[in-house]
Image (cartoon, rainbow, N blue to C red; front, side, top):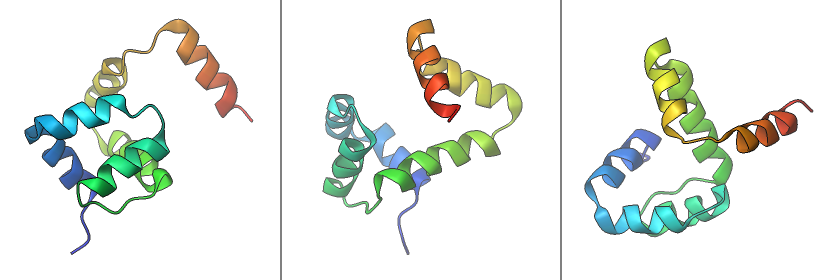
Length: 86
């Protein structure tokens, strides 16, 4: 069985050492390396798309709450939205 994004999230919730390592990962590639070190084999794109799919599959209120929990400030959100446009 191939580990899933959901399994990675569950492991992350329970593993304080893994949480600490994830906090230092600033880019998707770095997060993929941390996941790999924890026994999960995901590319950066698979991780990002997996997290995005979880948002898409969520109930509307849950998706909004998860997005809000990311802690975007107005500048970060604007910068990201400009990049998504093209």
